[in-house]
Amino acid sequence: MTSFAAVFVSPLVDDTIEVQVNQAAITWDLFRSGGAGGQNVNKVETGVRLRYKYKDPDTGEEKEILIENTETRSQLDNRENAMRLLRSQLYDMELQKRLAEQRKIEAGKKKIEWGSQIRSYVFDDRRVKDHRTNYQTSDVNGVMDGKIDNFIKAHLMEFSSSGEEN
Image: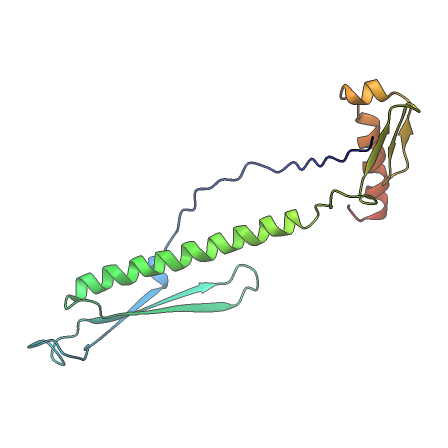
């Protein structure tokens, strides 16, 4: 009987994303909001435009997030809404960055099928073979009990000398 199993070890991920807003990188523009609204329209500057400049950590280039808010007739409320929207965008950027890192890690996973196995355990012949390094042993019970140091050593020696990793 032939069976396949996959084991993938991944680190515990810190799920907390704390958004840090650099107040010095924010500039505010005020403008008069238009539309129906009574006495304040075109007289009081209740609309706010928030510009947030930051450096992209991947490319190093300067970028800007621009948020305009005219939801309410209160400049203070519109400022608070703009800050909330900025924090939401920064949160989403950090979340996308973490998801991209996770996809990069998971790209190395192999399919569970013939030809993609890294190790064979043949109990009848008393043989365990690592297909990446061609290291094999006849101590099947020892390997099943966790004695895999020789496999780890063979893997490290194989891939540290060639400069690539599998």
